[in-house]
Length: 342
Image (tube, rainbow, N blue to C red):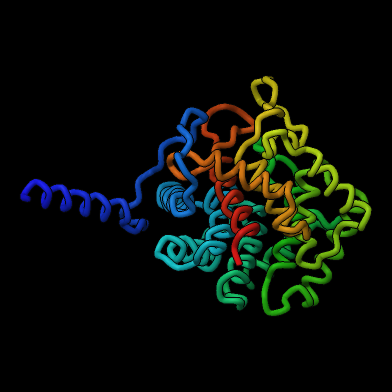
């Protein structure tokens, strides 16, 4: 009896430790994203959201900045499961503080930070309170001051596709900011003028990759009208044609990006970012959740989650950090929720 009692106590303590809420105070860094991490024995949405919490809290705490692939993506994805909890609250507050305080004293690190902040805060507002937060409006107002005369934005070009490799990514992000913002912001004079300049830019500079066209489809789901009907239909056909035989999508097929070491991209291997991103965008574009092609994509995601809760995606630049796995996990969660949540 004493042995049984001790066993039950140990099980309870172990469970309590595993279920401890993650915060900026107690978070530790997740293990590095690796192709060698074993697959999970079964799909777990809880493990996926816990990984997103951990990775984003650690990044916010240790790096003290926001990046497209980690905590920016987190604030878009996390509310599709639940916006409750300390992790989401702390990361949201960190972004608000950056906009309202750090920008006032030190300024933004670069223009892309302003545009990403505006878009992420707008989408997070829409998914949570449904109201335009003061920090969101501040970021949106600042965003339009950075728009060039040709309608574009000067973006980070670090050779890190798809997010930081060309100016065209910023076009879709600005459109998402204007379209997703609640309380009718998209009808404001600043938003209407800015979006029209985005349309003018696209007439002269069509998106260079199917990935960026898909980003515009996402923005158009909010009514920004950046793509003509023929462009949209062609993009849908192309995205569906890129589905792999196993039901997933390969991130590397969404553009013609080059690896820094000159090696070939893995265009025949499905991954978390490619599958999660495409399934999510197709749902936003109006493809039915029960469409067999999307259900095959969801099935691939559920069968290829890793033990940590993440989905692995190989970097399209070089084999060092693979931080794109963080964004891939965010999109995987968004895709599954878009196809299954009521």
